[in-house]
Image 1 (tube, rainbow, N blue to C red):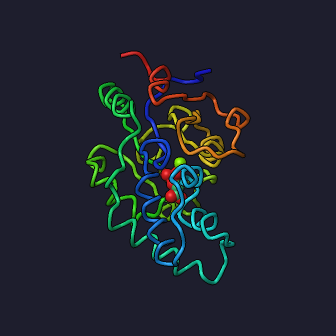
Image 2 (cartoon, rainbow, N blue to C red):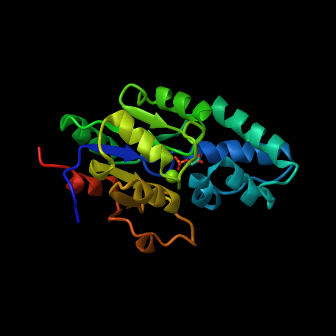
Amino acid sequence: MRAARIEGVLFDLDGTLLDTAGDLATALNRVLAEQGRSPLPEARIRPTVSHGAVVMLCHAFALAPDDPAMPALHEAMLRHYEADIAGRTRPFPGMETVLARVEALGLPWGIVTNKPARLTHPLLAALGLDRRAAAVVCGDTAPRPKPHPDPMEAACATLGVAPARCLTAGDALRDIQAGQHAGCPTLAALFGYLGAGDHPAGWGADGLLNTPQDLLRWLPPA
Ligand SMILES: O=C(O)COP(=O)(O)O
Ligand SMILES: [Mg+2]
């Protein structure tokens, strides 16, 4: 149920606004190849993408996040990803329609991602989204990342919209928790990078998005 008229929108990046899985899978497979390992099919990699590069590497190499090999693997993956950050990455089909409607309504929109700033800003620039997003908060630019409310609160403040009037959408439980902790209405993106253990119907989101266009009915009338 809509509690208040929506005056702004915040999108998670990987798995919600952008389909980044192809380029991240390519980067991960380049690291696997460097280490003499076989590539993984993209379908195996996809469910880990919204959890960041370290979790992707943990699954691919069967390592713990604090394994001594992790820092070098992580750096190698970021290097490969930066070299081809927007080769295949595009907004999810229908998302451009959503952004166009948000902008036509005169609503500011922004991005709250756990992706580091070093990757987020070049990616947004490559797709021309840096000029359109009114707020970009990254995993390392807020005091604490999602699921803490800090990045949502910072983005709402930058948009100049009260959290209760700022719609948030994300494909991971931490996105919904961050929105809830900040007092924002929350939508779970079912078209994102859900894994077998993810049950978004139980996350307590205010709505579920089967497609990006499902977000349109949460916006105020023109
Ligand atoms: O790169 C990550 O850690 C995940 O990014 P996201 O929060 O935009 O899904
Ligand atoms: Mg995500």
